[in-house]
Length: 290
Image (cartoon, rainbow, N blue to C red):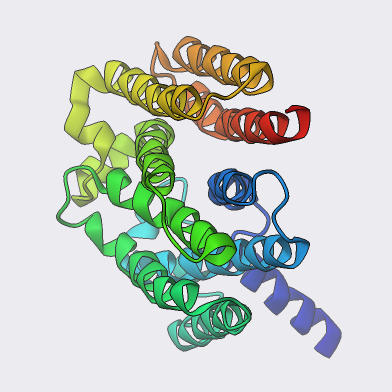
């Protein structure tokens, strides 16, 4: 009986941290890997890479718990989120706070192995992760804030590898902001009706009938920034080949979302991991083939 209860409790924690849905971890991990590859010129130290990969998993998990704490009164009213552990009462609020604190503490312990600049940046990263859920109450496009939060591994990666932040770090962060607006608007298009009922703000609501056009514009801006980075740094054919794949994948996003069907919009959101992977492959190709 004790073993069954423990298994059920761990299962509830797993779902609360969204470990059963790794797409969030991947969307957080890809830009971090872009930065590590660029900062380390294709050869970042393996210890730093492992610290960041583990940190991504921990902080994404903590972010999900903090998000559900903030939204626990709303999640039960939304079809897609009504079965989440806090909404159903499987996990109590005190447990959730303790879990979030433990995950953040573990992530901070990892950062202590890095330099002072990265440690200082980690406090900003924690602030962004903790405050993002509340931006849905007052920001018209909270997805932009999410893009900064999800992309803050970029300046941290540059700081960890080189102990300074070059302009390229901010270009990558800007690209990630527009990418996040694109993919999270697709995600928000699934929940638009429910969000309107409960008063939650989202880019899908803000853009209205121009949502598809706005998503595609964000992909164009994101790819434009990455093209500028490749041009300015004189990247070779390996980068541009992968960049072309990412561009084609972005075009496929339009095919999926043009009719605004909820299932296809969610599928488009999930497919964004391949865009992130293609860009990551581009950075790797640039340094390994040059």
